[in-house]
Amino acid sequence: NWTASSILDDQIELIRQQIGSAKVICGLSGGVDSAVAAALVQRAVGDQLTCVFVNHGLLRQGEAEQVEHDFVASTGAKLYVANEQDRFLNALSGVSDPETKRKIIGREFIRAFEEAERAIMADAASAGEEIKFLVQGTLYPDVVESGGGEGAANIKSHHNVGGLPEDLRFELVEPLRALFKDEVRAVGAELGLPAEIVGRQPFPGPGLGIRIVGEITGERLELLRKADAIARAELTAAGLDNEVWQMPVVLLADVRSVGVMGDGRTYGHPIVLRPVSSEDAMTADWSRLPYDLLARISNRITNEVEGVNRVVLDVTSKPPGTIEWE
Ligand code: XMP
Image (cartoon, rainbow, N blue to C red; front, side, top):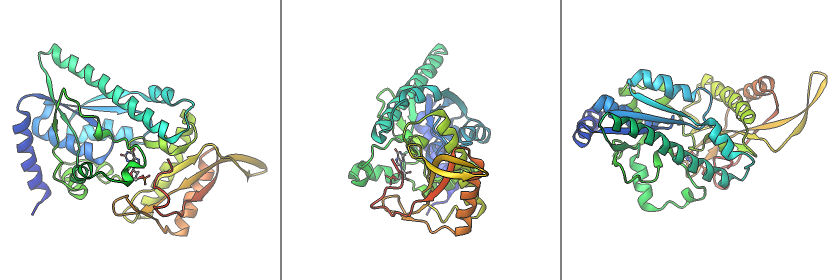
């Protein structure tokens, strides 16, 4: 029988035994798992840990700030930020094929992370120290899945920030290896992490990059961020966060339709709402959200987000649809 605080005490002891007085690094994605793993290691070994946040510019509104300010404020962790927004936009320029986007984002992410690693290692070396460990937020279901060979998981080339290729220079520290997601959230809350991080719904590693159907540009990201922020705020205000597994908001950048606003004709893009109910993301059903909530989201997005003149609802289950559009 576990409680969040007994897991915490046990893990802190184990982490101290494993790491000793060595230096350690941990990548942060903005997600729950990496944040809780990092916060645990920080609690165990303090400043021996340096966290690394590669900002690929594909996060939602407020998420980079959550890592850079809220995570740091609540844990006291040392954070190295690599602002790589331009690098990702350049690498993705002209690309609209979903698998190509995923591969480019995954590749650039690893390169950017390795560059950050080298900078931190050089810094440590000049102080006569060496980085020996890499923290990963692997959960129990990840351990089981990678042993089992999951069919549906291979339909798309998943990029997971926690799942960097095994780096032989480092020994891995995996403090969440025995835990399920709800236990991880409980431990995170016990560690004092903000509710927005601990309660975050699933969000894909390639981020908004796979929620723009068509080429990714800075302007399109900005537009999608605004629409997504409105949809999430209204879902939360309606008290329905727990009814919905996740709600991708997708920009159909290659589609335009005619609309009317005031005295004028518009020719804008549709935004798709994809709220789903699910147990494990392997199968899902579309969420029957209340009509008045859908109406509020639609009104606000078409009024407040320039360039969007239509909001549509995805009513497809998985299978045959996947949760994400790309
Ligand atoms: P699909 O679209 O395959 O998504 O039905 C199933 C779940 O996986 C998430 N997803 C990802 N998560 N890296 C991730 O970490 C990825 O590349 C990725 N692609 C999809 C998706 O949000 C859903 O929860």
